[in-house]
Length: 228
Image (cartoon, rainbow, N blue to C red; front, side, top):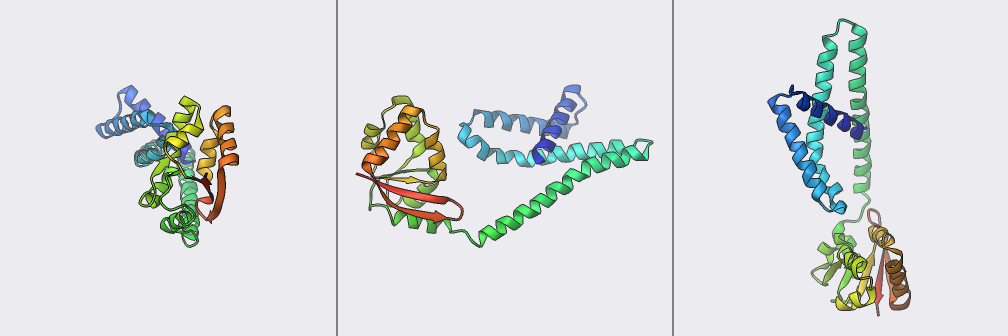
C-alpha cells in the first residue's frame, strides 16, 4: 500500500514540476528525490535496497503533499459527494498503513523478547570455529568474529569465483579454514553459475566437516563447516 501511494505521489510531484506549477518547497523535494534515486541506482544491487531507507522520509512528504492537495481540491468542489468520495479515497489508505504499522510494531516487540542478541549469536558460532582460523561467511558476522579470526566475505569471493571459475585454489589462497553458512549465504551460493556451484558442493562433500549448527530466532539455521 505504501509503495502504491509513494508511486502516485512521485508521479504527481513530477507532473507539477513538468507543468511549471511546483512551488519552491516542491522543487526542493523533487530535487532531493531525484538525487537520491540516481545515487541509489549507482549502488551495488545488493546494497541499494538497504540504503533506500533514506527515501522513506521524502516519500512520506510526497504522499502528504498529494493527500493535502487532493483534499483541498475536494473541498472546493460544489458537490458534497465528490468531496466525501475524495476524502475517503485519501484517508482510507492512511488508516490501512497505520493499522499495518501498529501490527508490525507489535510483532517486532514480541520478537524482541525472544531473539538472541547479536553478540550471543556470534559467540555461539565462534565456539564451533577452530581458534584463529580464517573464516568465510556473510558480512553480518564480521563484527562478531573479526577479533579472533581473519574474516573473508562470501560476496567478495563469489565475484572472484564468477571471474576465475576456480574455487579450490581461491580458498587455499586465503587459507580459509572454516565456512559459516546461514540463510543469506545459501541464497548467494545458489545464485552462482552451475559450474562453480557444483564445484563448491563437491568441495563441501570432500573437504568440509560439519562442526555444528546454531539455531537462531532472527538469523535462522547457521551451519559451521571446518575445511580440511
